Length: 186
Image (cartoon, rainbow, N blue to C red; front, side, top):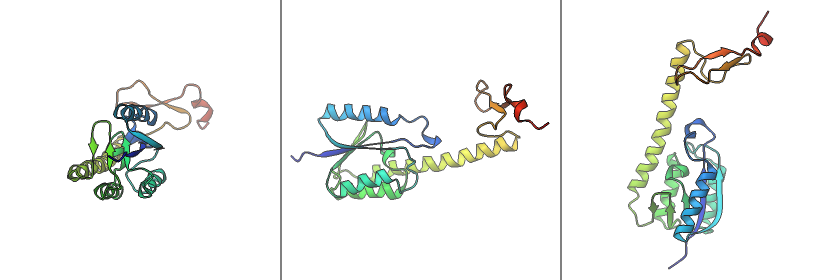
């Protein structure tokens, strides 16, 4: 049996949609434990802080080039949505898996192989893509609603502070007691 060499891939978006997702460091720790437990050989780590909602991530692309060259035949990642949230990257992964360039994808809770029916993988990539699209729509709607109510969504301007103790959705922007008088017009 051929020993599969794995690339470990960890990604966290630098954007707000991934605030709740495990940090890159914690992903790496869990994936190293998974590899040790299953006796998997990790030949290189790839990690980046960039959204996967659009293709063109440089580190992901570098990893895919290295797989095409045969430097590894497997990927270990936290979940499939760490690899792709767009159909171009997702399609590339599915194609490489179906053609045997990728022999195994291991996630924290599942394994994928070339002989699998990739329909479920395609559905997972589709769900990841739809999540991002819905999140964008819902965020824009929420910001528009706040603006219509006269609230300034986002970070407080100079001379003001964000209310850290208000209820979620009801936090206000308050005068900064230390700086307001310094920046207000006389």
